[in-house]
Length: 320
Image (cartoon, rainbow, N blue to C red; front, side, top):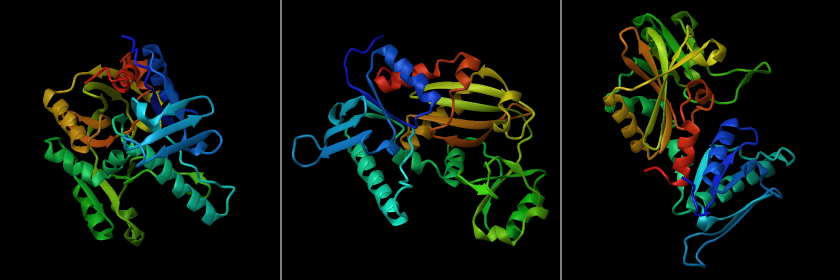
């Protein structure tokens, strides 16, 4: 079905984003106008002007890129995909910090003030859902099986936990750009032994988790109320280390798990999310984490699942 009402969808993302391109292609097919922008382009390539308290609408104004203009009162939906905030490297450090804050709270605050658009997903709700200890607790409350996990900066507690389990991994509590000796360090799930724990652990909390004796992983994407579940088979502890070593198959989730994941998104006020599970020898699903803006684009060509079309339909307002 083609949408005839010409209200635009805003797509906030970096310049090179193949996943966003896939969704925009589907929006074009539906006849939905798209205004794509990146907050880092603020200036001559991106302007925003909003008025408050001077008109019937709570917020009125426009956003203009080098090629498109959107009336803020007419925005249909916002796809908050992979936006990059400006850092202003050409300014003095204090000036750059000041300018960056004004953009985040000026441009960001104006967008958040819009009343009515569908957000996929709202950045403030994504931020709330980004705390892994809370994720683990919510998953358990909803009846999902969670591996034994410890968050601590106490070296003795860490050693005791590792000793109590056959195999343990360390995972970052939040991915952060990080270099060591000029080399980027990515936050993989890595094995850890009790002998590796020293007093430096006290600097910050660390997340340790018992390894699931798995035969596969599961990536579950939910878009609105549509559920796409893909079994990822490999011999890797962390399948993200080598995509060439993976094989994929489409599976159906148990109804109880599907309902729990929908309730999980409702708990945070999210309309989409990517969930990761480990599948053990008996076929039981072990909760690992939620990424409210997780990657899924590479799965579509491998599985034939219409994920980008589902996103486009959600943004166009065609799905409940």
